[in-house]
Length: 154
Image (cartoon, rainbow, N blue to C red):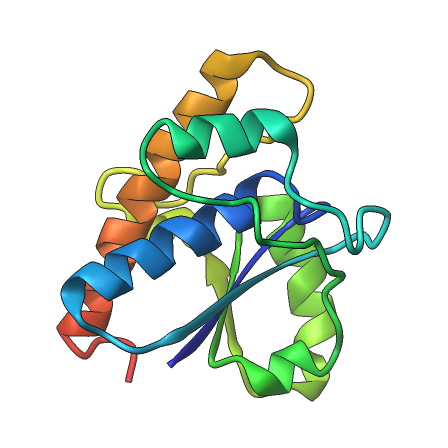
């Protein structure tokens, strides 16, 4: 399974989800491809936002090697599952996905009790916002891992 996490600029939410999911997959001994992308390309080539790096590092995730990139039309063919961090991203991705075969969905639909909710953008907030986002992303990744293990995404 190839999974792509998508947010606005690929410097806060989607790289955090990518790092958390990689850690979850490694711990479970599963081999699935994960990546992140942004709907906007204004941060392409840049590392994640420093507060996101710090919040992730406090929980043992290393975002430093990741670099932002823009979502491409080819991603809808390359990835099996493309997960939006919020409803605005989801709507835009659905419009862009017409030419692809990848399934598009909302990330927190995998987190029991958080279905239908957005992962808020912490970019302009304080460290507490980044911690909250990390809590949500860990819950979403745990639910996604369960769905992978149970074969619900095959």
